[in-house]
Image (cartoon, rainbow, N blue to C red; front, top):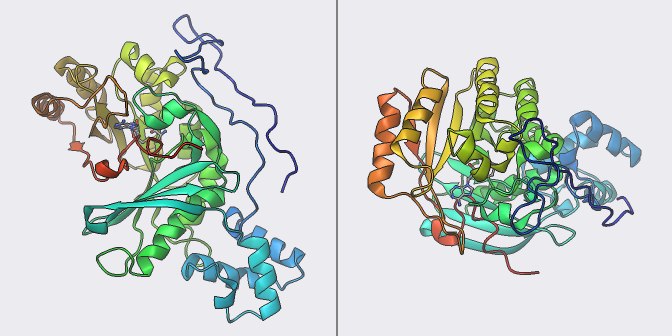
Length: 397
Ligand code: SAH
């Protein structure tokens, strides 16, 4: 592990590219930078098997003086049997299993609190990372699928004013293994029959917990590979079941399209016009609605995957029929659907969810343009597990 502890915070605001963009010194009302792309540099979590490709695992095992095939055995234990307990690895000589588990399966996430609702089928876990940073994941079991919502950063630098995480600022990027461990922990609970409905498997993963996944690109791609690589190299979850949600970092969307990973892209649009989106999703001051939608349509064309346009309906802010019309015109005839999310108000927020009649009118307008629309269920709301709420219930440190 690196000996550097908290060093200089490399906070960067985005340079202006046009007269309407934010100035380099633009700050939000509370004095924080409007946007923070580069994560503060902090000590890194310990290296873990899930950080490594198969080739890297074989090298790491060899460096420990073990035969390379031990990497395959260790991978099977972790990704297939979901164990990190050396004592259970009875196909490995005792000395080897202790050495390998100690070097490659360090404990990265410590559960601080688990909150359960929906008869046990929605479970939110608050995790403490090695340096005290807190993140959350949510497991949601439905009759036909199990979705795990994971965090990709401790905090977030994108500063969306309606999002609880956005209000907390960015603490640090998570490592690939810290992201993967959230899924492995959920998979383990499911396999052990701890979630009502009998033993089960994870079918879907959404990067909709804390953080902006495209601002932690490398670690997120590594995590997606570990999640989707066939067992025992990875968890063997279908890439089609993985959704990466972003505020719209245009260059990163382009890079993701070129990865050859057919994951679903969710774009958090929340407004069809620049004037409003500049305030709701501040990264819009850097990449405008037309640019971000072009990136999304390119993504759909290159991957063949239908893009999900996320739109949190906020009463009297973005739920007017003319905005539904404008959104409908932008999305019609594209490989895309609109996913409306009733706003889940953050504590102290002046905003709230749209009136039911306004929501219905919004849906009708979109449908009149032939745009497929879904309204997201609000699973987990009473445990603050719903979108954007993951930071809200974390205890003060
Ligand atoms: N940073 C990424 C992923 C995390 S948030 C992104 O912004 O896409 C996942 C989704 O929840 C995003 O669409 C986000 O805009 C939405 N969201 C955040 N706060 C919310 C709230 N209070 N109510 C409803 N949706 C919210």
